[in-house]
Image (tube, rainbow over all chains, first blue to last red; front, top):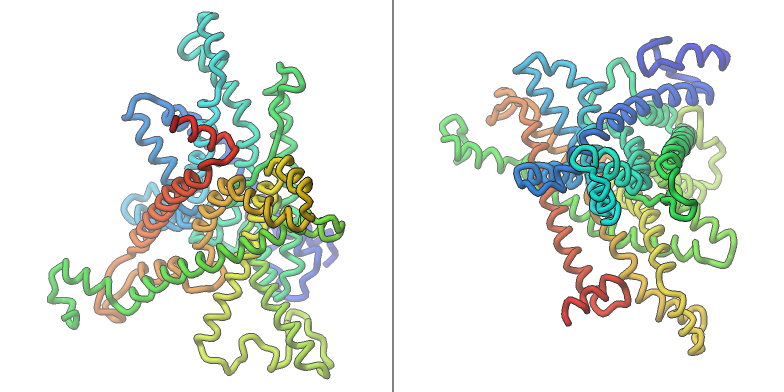
Length: 268
Length: 291
């Protein structure tokens, strides 16, 4: 099989197109590159979907945590505490088995036991909690003067939030949120190692990398390939978030712009 | 008393159920997790210290090595490192032993999809008792954790060292201390307070990473929770039950929440004590509050 044929056969193997049978002997570099790259589809899918949906819940939770009403504040605090205080790995397991027992009661939960929905829900809740903590911190850090200025202009309520508070907090939170996005994408690799089954060997990048490592008993090829893909993805995220950061800061003079500094906040 | 579970009331049934031999395995596994933490935390700190020192070195290749070590975990998921190091370390050890112990072996070590070393070089030896295999597996896991978390710790400690005010070092030099002396007597004692927020964050992360032991093949709490929670039929056990895995994992979730909460409280206290009298914003705030 030439490399071009391999790419044709396996490029979309992770989502069920192309050759059904995974290569089982005489592994070539090309096969490893193609299949691990194909697995990245899942990582990108999980990362994107939970990041996009999580953003909204995170904003609500951050507002909730900052609220003066304990009926709103307490549940938000607990939600954030539960998801930030426990390992994502255990959350995946618990989520999977929870969906499994719900499924036996209500057929509505059927799709939740497969990774594409169930794991996405867990990741969505998890990233919401982490981002909410970031947004909450940013909301607390809004300069008093900005709010005063808004008041002076007669802005109040929703308008004040929409025009002043929200954009400012987003601008303050953005570097940390970029970091969160990077590690969210990294943690998508846990999905297929934590209960959620990979049906018909359709798994993510790490799933295929460990498949090759197990078969060839040589970890020195598949894992560096995986690392390369993830470094590329990290750079892409930094690039995209950097563009957004520029836009969020475009009204500020150069020296007052929020710098993108990357701190590690590492695994969950 | 637990001999005939059918006759027991539900309370006693539960008590008997929770003290079966396999459940003792689960409780034992909590010990494994704590042991892992107790060994890994200082080991990672040592690796981190080494890495940070290497990154500060004036010798260029060493500096590159330190910087590369610190940055490996930035772009790549850590779980990939876990899966990688467990095999790679094992093979590295066996390869080294093979070279030393069987110098006259003429076949290649990598034969297609196999990794072949002579019998004497196998780790652990195939004749070794079961517990040696378990200890070896655990030791590999500890080393893997220490390497990965050492990289995190290195970057925290490196930041801590850089945060110590330049004037402190200059004063040390003015007193005629050598580079080494000022490092040991001035820099290291002072860097902890700057590094502590990062290190306590790291400790939380380390706690939350312990379930990954499961991926490294050590029978840890995740393994037992899966094992014990699964549906049990009356044929194989006198304590049959349905699929209880959800409850077992809920228990683990609560365990980790409690663990991180307790750590948080303890670390906060420690931070308060360490900031006391330091020339930092935190120390200054404490001083003001006392006046």
